[in-house]
Length: 136
Length: 136
Length: 136
Length: 136
Image 1: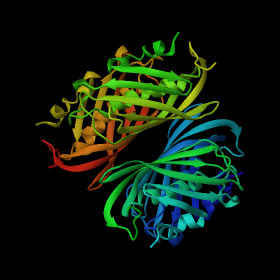
Image 2: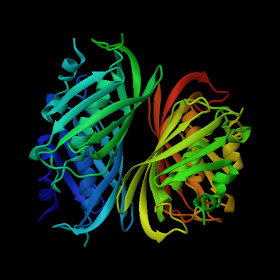
Image 3: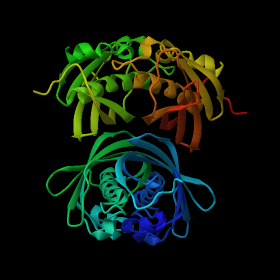
Image 4: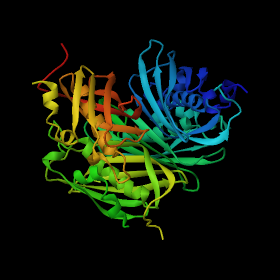
């Protein structure tokens, strides 16, 4: 199974219109074009929508080694508002990986390349084998 | 306008099936009953769905004073998996509030009262008046 | 060996004048009386001094079960300044513990009971046995 | 007054043997050579010592614009242990700056260039003028 196909089973991310556009070992990119359905009561993008975009990118990068990685915790810092019509891109990079834990940073930018948010997460790596592996 | 009515304009949270059940000054509660649409590729609840639930509770608590509060950053720690049919409840409490900033902690529990996740956030408080105020 | 005696080997915390005052399973308290040596260039307590106080309390609570627990990450939120002569108390509580991981929250208050900072951390629990155990 | 001279008033960082080695607008570098006094009860570097190193680098970068910046919160992720004799270098970079808030990331490496920890922080920027400014 292809890893992008695997993550199409992430129904919450699919409902939010998120697409994985690139996955390599310890790296991934995802994008989301904003609609009125991503907005909060203040009329800007809900933090949860941006978190979900970052989380899918993180999950693809962290699971790219073929073993199940689960988030222990995640943080997100918000810088710029966004609105319907904008396209947000999340790029996840592995900063550190150990037998049992890993740390990833994700930058979320808009279509003008401006930094909208930064996300980072610590994962726990289980022995469970996933139905794909990008490391050759 | 009632504060619960105001937050029904949070379309991303509404799409996720989240309901505010209680709002008082510096405090709020929200809940979400899980369906297959909240799941990730691993078959447990997407972190972004839990984040969105916590974020709506936080937003109601932080905006309850009638001035616009925006999240600068937020962290979430995950403890227990959950699945379709479970009901998650998020309870937000104000730990500290200053003229310009505030800090809130949110506990997310399942229907058995077990702690599923902890969320916390720092907000920036603008001078913008909101169309409601719970402080008398 | 007594757990308080074990933590007197924390030389950085000892140099900072930190004392463990209470340790029970999943719980601990530590305190530090501030001197000019704890101040930063702005004349208030250095964030690192408050972090160290919270970290010692966390370490005692997380290691109270007799197995080595290491911090994977920690966050601290600052609310009130403090100054020489103030006494800060950190109280650590276990919010969640699993075979391999644990999550702890620490509240730091001054001598008037005002909340100065909140700290939280995720630990990884190794199999290494410590020379003490508070669980009977 | 020179900015490096100003930060020599950070007595907690000075006691820990930390030196600012480079400061430019939105950027700084600091270093600390480890001694037995930086160790914790487990015999590796106390998290608070690494936090203090990162915090001084952050403070220099965030205050380099000549206005007082205060940390609202900070997070640190630990990857590798270190020991007496090692030299740790912290490099702080400004990721985002706004009228009232800023966000900084700090990487802490050992003398072999290995990543020991990542630190990030959100600051609040006051109107208070500092006795120096690096922006021309």
